[in-house]
Structures are given as structure tokens and as C-alpha cells.
Length: 404
Image 1: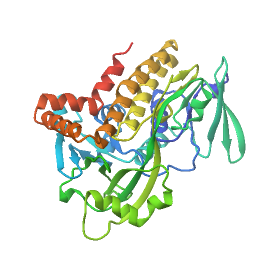
Image 2: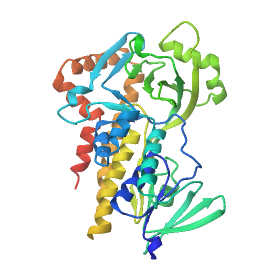
Image 3: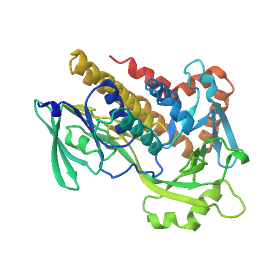
Image 4: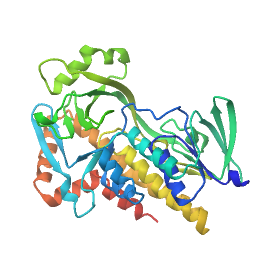
């Protein structure tokens, strides 16, 4: 292996890939970030940052920037579409558990931009290469070999390890000897973005609105000009053509359905995507590793997926640094797999599946029992703290750390 090959290759310039590159550069580990696109894409994706993630980013000085650019969410509503507020959860009850007893709403493309700027400003010799799509990876005793598609043709790059942060369709994962078991929901999710301000009419910055026929989630993000944009997420039929879903009459029907108002909503962005629940059978195959959506995908209710990806790479980079500089064995990479895959199955999958089932419950008696349970939780500080430790990802983070 030449000096130039003694590096970590990272596939994917999303929030997880940029985090991995920044953390590796801070540790003094050579790396090259390879991104298939020619820019950071700003289509509506993840936008929630949970307390353990804020704690992690605080260790590398990024959290103050996130707090400055994002919206701090101190409470969120669980609602019934017809009856209104069922439970108002106060994240402040977590003040003894974390220095950040709140969520932060900040779009993932802005997180990418923050990390990219920090990386290029502080570590200008760390290559960030656009228009480079990792198409295939193989490995030998000395390292990994990546076939990379570029505007100039296919290139071959070598490294000591390959880290796949290249999303749910990860080519790195497909190059590994691992399965990606789980299921795909029958319906898709439609995201509509509007400037209409729901806060003065009683909504929190984050809302989950249950209904047996047409549930939705509503939350506010800073938007492209930081003046505020509300996103509404609806389940939609998987066979309906996208053009039909995007028709003005349809989007007005959906938004007016949960909050009627005079006049049409101005819908500034429409996006639809398929939703899956899957976890890779292993996060490691020799010198190839995966993190984020490449390792686990889930429905977005609860805003957990991106956060789990951040937790993945903070965990992994700490172990890679011990291998790189302290002579530790690669058994640490198996521990990474055990820790992060276990909590993805025990917490990420279980919680997000449960969130969706609760919002779409068609059994009226069962739904009422669930509502009474939520009311009982918010009425009791100890119960609310225990509940929020789980949904704010504190318990899952602690569980991962406990796995040897």
C-alpha cells in the first residue's frame, strides 16, 4: 500500500458522509469523500436533530452553529385530526438527562453545508470530490479498491477502508456480502411545503396528527431563506401517478382536510417517496463498512433515521482512530456492528413502526386507549421523562454504549 492509498474512502456526500469526513480529518486520518452528484441537493429530507446528536456535535464545535441556524423545539403535539390536541409533550423534563432538552429543526442539506464549509476551511487538503459515483468495491489483503464513475470515465481508487454513506440504494452495501432485510410500505409519503404559518392558530413546531384514514405530520423548518417553511407529510396510494398527486386540487384537498382555511394554501414544493423499514444483516464486511441509510432505513415519523446515522459515524470514527493510531485490532469494527445494528433493530425499527401504527390505527376503541395512555404520560413528570428518553433517542444511545 502506498502512502496515497493509506486512507479511508467515503462514498456519499450527504449529512452522514460529510460528518464522517469531518470527524476523520479532525482525528488526523486521511480520507477522500466521493459524491455522485455535482452539488448538495436541497430537496426536502430529514430535518430533526435530537438531544444525543446535539451532545455529539458539541464535542467538535458544531452544535452552536446548528442552534444558530435551526429552530429550537421545546414541545411537540400529538393530535387527533378531529378532536385536536391529545398530548403536549414538554421536552424540558429531560433537563437532568441532557444539556439540550429540546429538538432542533434544521434541514439536512444545511447540515451538509455547515460540515462542508468546516471541512474545507479547516482541512483544505482533505479531498471532497463531486461527480464521482462509487459503482463497485472489492477488497484484498491490503485494502479496498473502488470503481468510481466520473465525467472523465471510470477510475480506480485504493484505500485502507471503504465507508459507505451512500444512502438506501448504497453501492457499497451491494458490494458487501450482507442482506438488507425488512419490508416496503404499501403507501408512499407525500411532502408538501407551504409558507402558511400554523403556529398562531395553535400548532406546535412539530405535530403528529392521527387519523384512521388520513393521518399527517406537520413541522416547521427554517426554509431556504430562514424565514420559515412548514412541511406536511401525508400517506398516499402507491399506484396513483405522481402527476395526479401533485395536482393543485389534490394538494389543497389534503391540507384543507386537516386545517381548513379561507382561500388556497400556496404550496411551494412537492415531493413523494417510497418508505421502507430495513436493516443490513451486518454493518461490516472485512474492510468495507456502512453507516446511515446505507445500513438502515425507516419511515420518518419521529425524525430518527438521520440521527441514527450520525450516531453510527461518531461511534465508528472513534474506533477507527484507535485502530489507526493506537494499534487496536479490527475486532473494534465488529463491536461497531454489534452496537449500532442492535439499537437499529431494538429502537429505530421498533419505534418508527410503532409511531406509524399509532397514527393510522383504525380501531376506535384501541385509539382511545392509546390517547388515554398519552394523557396519563404527560400528566406524570416521571412517566413523561421515561417516555421522552426513548423517543428522544437517549435510551437507545445509552443501550449502544453498553454493548461490549
